[in-house]
Amino acid sequence: MLKNRLKYSVLFCLLGAGMTSLQAQDQKKKDPTEEHNPVKQVIPEAAKNLLGRWDLNVNKQGKVVPSWLEIKLSGFTTLVGYYVGDSGSARPVSHVKLENGKFSFSIPPQWEGGEGDFVIQGELTANGMKGTVKTNKGTSFDFTGEKAPYLKRTSTVKWGKPIELFNGKDLTGWKATSANNQWVVKDGILINQKAGANLITDQKFDDFKLEAEFRYTTDANSGIYLRGRYELQIEDSPKDRHPGNLYFGGIYGFLSPNEMATLGTNEWQKYEVTLVGRLVTVVANGKTIISNQEIPGITGGALDSKEGESGPIYLQGDHAAVEFRKIKITPAKK
Image (cartoon, rainbow, N blue to C red):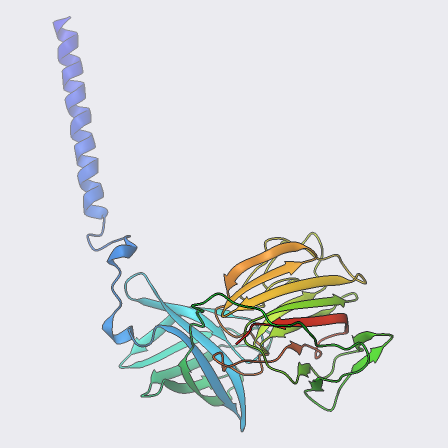
């Protein structure tokens, strides 16, 4: 019996020594600088004024087009973000380099095609930022930017009287963006016959509730721009497709609906939208698919990047045919 006890004692000692040795090795392997506590995150002084959302204006051969940029801190020192050009959706930026007061990052092409990356470089100025966008085809454009407003409302919204934006007879109250206007009214229905000009209301709005009844055919791709800056997608998305921010009911490139609520092609459908500041709620065909979510910035195709100003309702007509039979807006009282 004594011999057995001695054997087990020696065995336990050996096992304990082995465990201690493994723990010591683990401690050596662990980087003493590694930290996973967001509470201890401190913004680097060099990046402090750069972080945040920026409304950009890009000079494209004499024409000013809107763009948008967000720069965020990932961990303790790495800068990342999102970028929106004058077309396409928000694009993730995996690394924003910051050296000697100048920032730069590259992004692959999206819908533009071609090979190679876009390269964006810039720096802060007394009034905001400035820089250049170099495309993957070698063309460079200058840009300026200013911090985007929060658009946070501090009081409860009071609603005014509803306004019928479409009178069922003609295009009164609307204007086309180009001479290639394909919008007509037939039998009380506003029809975009094929890809052509976009359609914009004469009136501008801040906060509002919008009702729109629409119909589309196979492979349709259109949208309703809220304040002319934030696109609510109208798209022929398959009913069994997983919902996403590029598809039916999404705020293009930013907010995904919680379900695919489309009724499909050739069916009259309805959006009910409430926009207060940056917070949007979307009800599609009676289902709340986006609930009081923040729209971070402008989407591709926006009329401008002046987010602090009121803006029109704008119907996308440059992609494919779409029809509307009702467009009603209830603006907030000022």
